[in-house]
Image (spheres, rainbow, N blue to C red):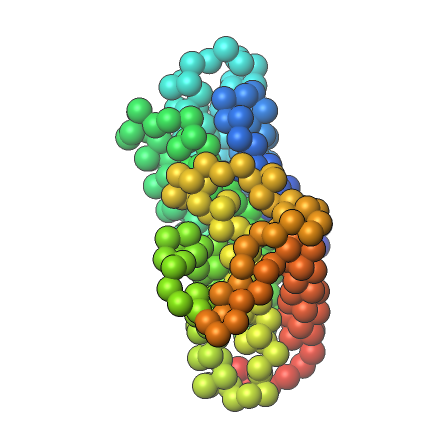
Length: 326
C-alpha cells in the first residue's frame, strides 16, 4: 500500500533540496575554484543530503531494518563530511576521495529507498535512478585520480543538483496521475533545455534565421501534447516551451562551464540576462528577414514575463480539476 510522508518531512525534503540547488548554483558562479569557499559549500551540500538520509530513518512506518540502515548511512556520510571539515589541510586527492565516499554512501541510501515497497512506484524508480547516477559519478572520481579541481567541482555540483531536484519532487509528492505527469514534464523540460538546447545554442548558432529555429526547438517536444490532448491544452504546451527557453537564456553558459569547458565569467553574463546592464546590447535576434537588437533591459523583461507565465499556468494546471490525461 502506498504511503505519504508526514507534512514536516515533506517540507524538510523541499527545503533541503532547494538549499542544495542554491549551493550548486553558487559554486558554479564562483570562478575561483581553488578557494576554500567552494569546497566548504560542497561539503555543506553533501552534509544536507546526509541529514535527509538520516531523517528518512525516523519514519515510523518503515521497517526497523530499513530505518536502521537509513540512519546508519546518513550518520556515515555525515562522519565523512566531518573529517573534511575538521582536517582542512587535506590534500586534493584525499579531499576528492572523501567526498566521493560521502556521495557513494548517499547513493546507497537512495538505493535502499528504492526497495521500500510501501512507496509509490515512481518514487522508487526515482530513488533507483538517482542512486545509480550518484554511485556512477562517485566512481568516476575514484577511478580517475587525475581529475582537475574544475572537473571535480563540476561533477559534485551536478550530483548535488540532481539530488536536490529529486528531493523537491519527493517533498511535493504528486498524488494524482495529472500531477505526476506534470512533474515529469517539468523535469523533462528543465533537462531538455539545460543540456540539449544549450548544446545546440553553444555550437550550432550560425544558420540563417537561427533564433526562429531555436524557438521552434523549444516547442517541438510539446507539440506531442497537442496531438494527443487537442488544442484545449495549448496553455500547458506553451508554458513548458517557455520553461525550456528560460533554461536556455539563463543556463547556456552555466551549461557551457559545467559540461563543455567554456569557462565564461558567469556573474557578469547573468547580470546582463537579468536586465542589470541597462541598454547594453547583448546580441542581435536573427529572424531571417528581420533582426532585433536585444538589450539587457529587453532580455530582463522577457525573462521575468516568462517566469510569471510559467508559474501561473503550471500552478493553474496543478490545482484545477480537468480531464487532462483522464
